[in-house]
Length: 265
Ligand code: NAD
Image (tube, rainbow, N blue to C red):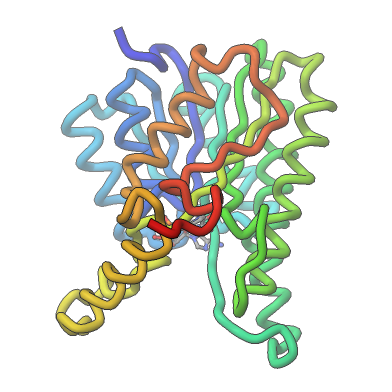
């Protein structure tokens, strides 16, 4: 028996990285999954692989730009048409831009807010009535280490990730009576194309750059390594499944101990 048997979960940004692993794990645990992303080719390919493993009736891919209201309406309609209802959402899609705050162009700041913050808001707004109509369920938002503590050169990103924690708490309060639990994940450094652009083009990353990155994580992360997207997916599974039935409104840090402090060992 899977931990998500009978559940219907929409996962954004599911074409690669953490969203992809969440979609694969949730399907393996019995859920029906609707994958959304703006990378259509990659998203459809992931959905096809899941269909081969879990069955074609258990997965769909739709184009879902999380910053567009009309895309959210279409995604909810597609999920209901394919699976009859929606009782889970993982707001995973996000973008990162590096810049000093004092040099960040307004357009860049706005773009990060549009995807990370407004995207999560629109997702909660679109999914909550559907989940309520299904009798209850879960929303998992993706914040970050930077939603809880500072990090230079990611000001726009950190602001949106802190905002997601605010959204999470308020949504948890407002939706509890409808039997909807809302929690947030705060990953540290996770080995996906966002944190490691070398994954997009391994040939473009030198051995020195790879070694330097491994050395950095060894130094700053107590567990001595970067996280794997599968490890974040397991937290998303916990927060979506019955094992977390008495938990709502909380941020969960998954960072190999990075936030615990500076290690002198
Ligand atoms: P990633 O870049 O590999 O994946 C992000 C996915 O979101 C991509 O498939 C991308 O196409 C999609 N996306 C971007 N803009 C979108 C939009 N407007 N609409 C729909 N989809 C869109 O990175 P990841 O590490 O898998 O990131 C997943 C989430 O985890 C993000 O919210 C990110 O901020 C967060 N996070 C990542 C790390 C890390 O170190 N990788 C750390 C903390 C938090």
